[in-house]
Image (cartoon, rainbow, N blue to C red; front, top):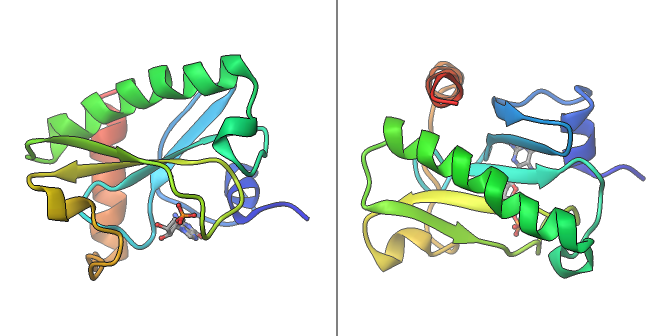
Length: 130
Ligand code: 5GP
C-alpha cells in the first residue's frame, strides 16, 4: 500500500508544498515542531533511509541544503536542525527544523499550531526563495 507521503507526492492528499524536482519532494510538516518545519522525501518509496541507493542518499542532502537555505531566509533562527526518525511514516524523510536551542529539536515537545492560511503563506514564501 502506498505511504501517506506517496499519496501527497501524487496529489491524492493535500499538502503545503515547498519544492519538487524529479527525485525529491518537500512540504511543510502538518504537525510542526517549529514554524517552517519541512519534510524532504524521495519520490521512490523506501522505508528506512539507509536502505536507499547511494545516489538517493547523497542527493537528498543536496536537495535538503537548498530547502534549508530557503527556510532560513524566511524563518529567523540560529540554524536549521536536521533529523531522521521514520518511526511514524515508513517512507524516508528528512526533517528540517528551524532551531535556536537544543530543546527545539525535541520531538516529544508540544507541536506548534498554525492556521491553514499561515501554513499556505509560509510554504509560498519558502518556495519563492528557491
Ligand atoms: P517520523 O516518521 O519521522 O517519526 O515523523 C513523521 C512526521 O510526518 C511527523 O512529524 C508528522 O507530523 C508528519 N506527518 C504525518 N502525516 C502527515 C501528513 O499527512 N502530512 C504532513 N504534511 N505531515 C505529516
